[in-house]
Amino acid sequence: MIKIIKKGDEETDLLNKQLVQAGKFASLGELSAGVAHEINNPLAIILTESQVMRDTIAEAPGLSLNDEVKTELIASLSQTEAQVRRCSLITQNLLKFSRRNKSQTETVNLNAFLEEVIRFMDGKAKGAGIRFALDLKKDIPSFLSDPSLLQQVFINLINNAVDAHEGKPYGTISIGTRTDINRHGVEITVGDTGSGISPENMEKIFDPFFTTKEVGKGTGLGLSITYSTIKGLGGDISVRSTIGKGTQFTIFLPFSPPDNANENREVELKNEKT
Amino acid sequence: MKRPRILLVDDEVAFANNLLKLLSKRGYDAVVVYNGADAVNMIGEKEFDVIILDMKMPGMDGIATLKEIKKKAPFVEVVILTGHGSVESGIEGMQLGAFDFLMKPVSIDDLQEKVSEAYRRKLVQRERE
Image 1: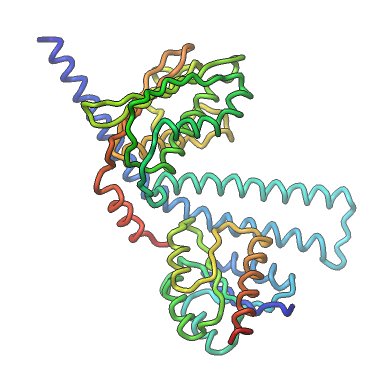
Image 2: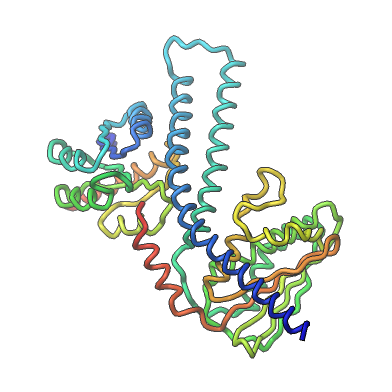
């Protein structure tokens, strides 16, 4: 009896956490779109100011700068422009987080799709001494989903898995698929033999802007985007991890995406002001 | 090839003025206005080859301005600039007859290239008339 009550409490706790997470995403989505727009405009001004300064240095009559000063000024402007591009990438990610591109639902052959993503990521993994171990069950039927969104999800997860091996000379990323008949969908696992996630970080990993990567290496939006994408496709994502041994993400995707997935995006897009 | 006459429409005064400086320095005959209504009035007064149009502006927004511009000057080419990074709004503009769209922040080289493409199309269309 105690066990049953305890299990019930755990499930309630999990549902509450998921509810809080969904709420966070709804409000942060709106906020992110606004922030991205408001940042893009000043970035545009900074970039043009930098270009005006380049023109001035190159052409201004009577401005005599020695070569060393000129080189230093041009280097500073190049750095300014590089940082504008960096911020611009962040705003693009913010926009992806707040409003994914219009959904393109089509038939997906999951195993072939994953093999394609792995081929794409193989170079990066090999460079870090990591091999892929695949366990893709052959009985998975083709199903309707959004390949461009799924590609983003798996590239995010594999990128994180590669980064989790930093400091280790070699490692393995295991990817598995199996049909979940009871839930009428498919389960995909992405595991790694990396450093693992500490229990205190575990609850925050899907939070926007949470990152354990060093400054400049990650925006902290990859897993947030992954989470909201999977939820948008009517699926689920969970994670388990052991420090020093590795992490495994488990994703469930239904064979049919929710009917309102496209409708919701259409409304969002119509309401959008540019 | 003659340099195109350009109308810049953007409510971000600092940005619009910088673009004006950059384009003028590159030999373009450029004029700037800071809202959609002034842009529509300006079309009636002067002939332009290419219009660089911001989407999010107070009052008459980019889409409304584009519709009015196309009524008054159907053959002028419009390049949309959007700070929102929204592909959909750019596509909506193109469906209304805009030449293409660019997302802010944009470099002067990319903008110049797009303006040249738009101008070439305008010249080809004029030859066909």
